[in-house]
Image 1: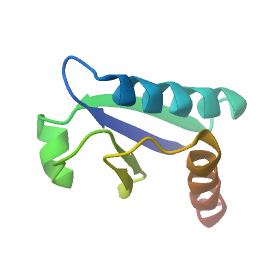
Image 2: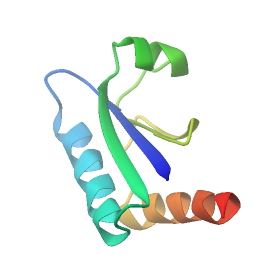
Image 3: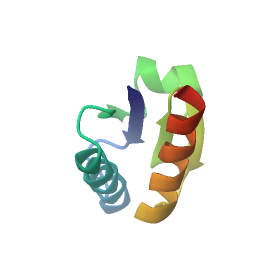
Length: 87
């Protein structure tokens, strides 16, 4: 299982919502293989990764994007690369 964590602000900004939507779109393509969880950047979980900018995307404990909206294609490539390493 690939764990995608999307860190955003509260209330969520448009960029944070967009990243979460894109991550969920990718998750839907690979049922049962990708779990997407949204976190507040100012949380205990956010502190673990030193989140300073939102949106931030973490895949299996690796920070892959900070402070920008990744394209759905780039996000999917990052997820698939980690899936290959873990298979």
